[in-house]
Image (cartoon, rainbow, N blue to C red):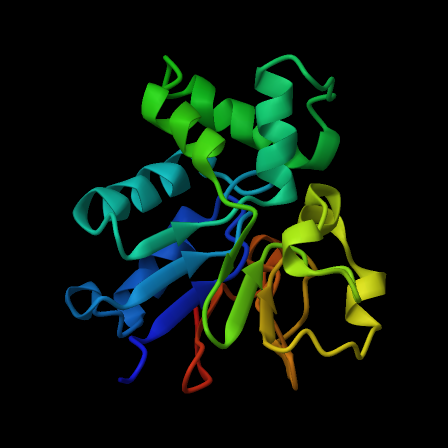
Length: 209
């Protein structure tokens, strides 16, 4: 039986208008059990982090079984900040934009807090592993550390280690989608003026806005 199609979306970083345009462009059919996977970093640096979370939560309310939300390092920092586990200056990693976005929509919605708490560190299918930053080579998936799943760069990107499945990731921005055997990097710097990118993983079709 053919696996339902899977769509993976790269780092959004508060770019709600680009997200709206991308969602209108992709050929995602949740009524056919097709998955839509977000790779993390919904917030920070861009102008409307609140609006991005509202948008994806709205999608989840309509199709709760077909949407997968992964945690990015920016969600980790933000939740640590708002719960008092980490001190950040308002210039750290663009968090000032996120705070401004939420202050304009006071009070902080409980649904948003729950959203941040429920984010997954990775998602696995028969042929793909989805993680925000990547994987540490030679470490089994179930033993990967949170810090690597959310933050790793060179050790993953510069390794030719075969994880047995294609790793679909964000975190590290590229001028264009980074597609090579065993790797698919989808952060194309939407918040820095680049496009927001979605990959239909089975066919390799790319959607960029």
